[in-house]
Image (tube, rainbow, N blue to C red; front, top):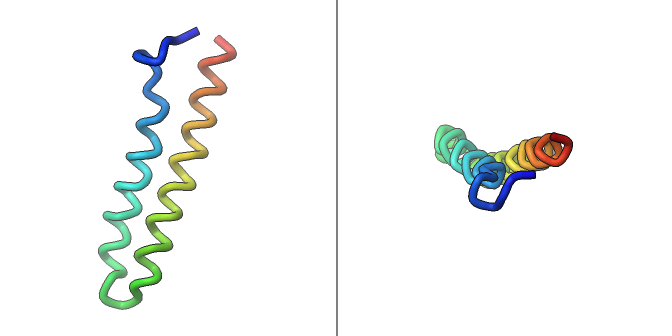
Amino acid sequence: MTTKKEDKSSWAIGGGILMGIGIGFFFLRENPLAFVGCILLGLGVGLIITSIISSKNRQT
């Protein structure tokens, strides 16, 4: 089992949000709600990746 210091799965949430912001800037002029949608999509992807990584860490 990994300790909190070794567990980097929570980084996926921040990375997903940053990717969502980066992608959302391309849509900001056309549709501001698409910007918010990209941020939420990035958050969702980050949460899914975090759950996958943490479940794999528990199995080993």
